[in-house]
Length: 98
Image (cartoon, rainbow, N blue to C red; front, side, top):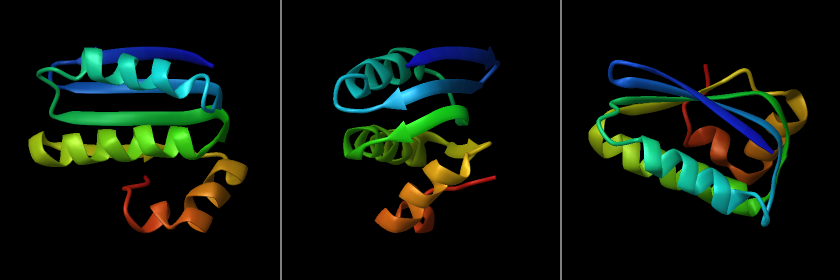
């Protein structure tokens, strides 16, 4: 998994590439929550994310809950295989996909 971010004022976009699983999910969680202070809009760019396990889903849901109280979160550029995971788990009904 590789992570990169772009901050613009109170907006942060985090690009996630590769697989998010039980090994890499803690790194994703730390990366998001170490950088979210002062952010009102979080964008997760999943263009290059090929897979997420339940551990990755948990991190994304935690980020969504955190951002709901201080702003918003949206997910962009989701690959069809990853979108299938969101749909099967019901996350597609909870999260904001653009």
